[in-house]
Amino acid sequence: MRSIVNDLMALERRPMEALQRRQSQYEAQLSAYGQLKSTLSGFQDAMKGLSSTEAFKVFSASTSNEEALQVSAASTAPLGSYNVRVERLAGYHKMGSSEFASTTTFGGGAGDSISIQVGADPADTISIDLSSAQTLEEIRDLINDDVNNPGVSATVVNGNGGNQKLILTSEDSGAASAMSISYGGSLSAASFGLQTLNDIGGDLALLDAEISVDGYTVTRSSNTISDVIQGVTLDLRQAQPGVDIQVQIDRDLDAAKESVQAFADAYNDLRGSIKSLRSGQLEADSTLLSIERGLLNIMNSPGSGGVYNHLSEIGLSIQKDGNMSVNTTKLESALNADFSAVADLFADPQSGYASRFESLTNSWLETGGLIDSRTDGLDSRIEDLEDRQIAMDRRMEQIEARYLKQFSALDSLVAELQGTSSFLTSQLASLPGSGQ
Image 1 (tube, rainbow, N blue to C red):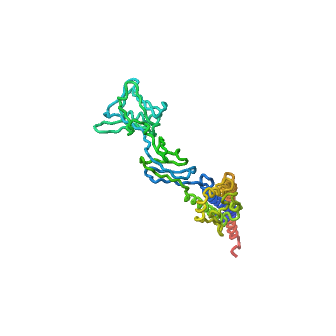
Image 2: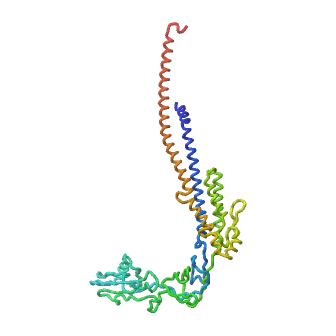
Image 3: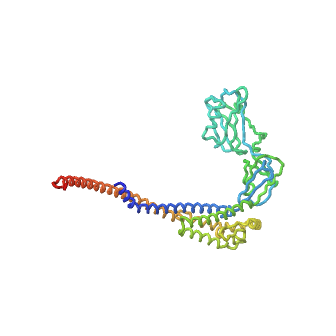
């Protein structure tokens, strides 16, 4: 009986298998769209290095002495060469106390305190209550743990014979972050003997960095200076008074060429992905055709009246197989001839190739865009199929239960009939003359 029911249920489940096959197809298509979306995202990322003039204009900055000075340049940096001298590095104001035994305590009287002000603003002051006597280590912890600490770090240096010193260091460099000390109660400057440890001869202004750029002397509070040469950040590493260091700002042609090559590679990857998907799960899908048409429309629409209007003019061409190739020699020649014109060919907001490609790709990938509408439709179909399969599973359980009940009843009937048959046979056999 069980085998008969199994055979009947196999027939009943054929519609379920058809639903499962259809779901598998939709899931495969959904996965294919995921692959397409990933490739489109890669294509979109490749546009970011070219779709704005700021992104395209990458500069290289170099110095003749990187041990003393390192530089970097933003897109606003002007091309040029500068003579820079690093006369002095910015320092962090540091003060040290006299030497005391580790058991020595300070304060203990009403109103006893030490206050440390960082810079010129009295609001940037930390006051340590010493009405209860404290050791140097305890004072250190009170300073470092204070939530209102304005930017001073305290340490204790242990010397010989159990003696130690309290060291205070401003957390920011330059004269503007120099510390000043005041005392309350019975304490005074003599209580701690705090003195500036920086070798500045008492002149706090010498905590500022000093450089000269083409003979023009400037001071700054930090060793990272970005407001002297437009778009250029100077990172001071070592003072070399009186020594000229040449800073050179050039366009980074290698970075521009890498961005253009990345553009061509991403275009080819996208075409390859479309070709692969067309021969696979998205064989008859109109989405691929829409994307191809969008790409070709941009490729066939030149720029708007600049020095360069076609990609082929700077070394990018479409081969017979549809892939894009880059003639690096021609590209470098165009960059050297008119860098800004090459940048505009890609980055012009209205007619730049990268700008237009980025805008088009955004429309495909945005929420509610082309890809979303396709995947949402597939998700809805898969959900519907899953609901239908759940309902069909319940129905299959009912059908199987009915078959089992019917065959069980049939088995009982057959057994009953067989019993009746045996009884009749035995009765007939016992009739007179039944053996004749």
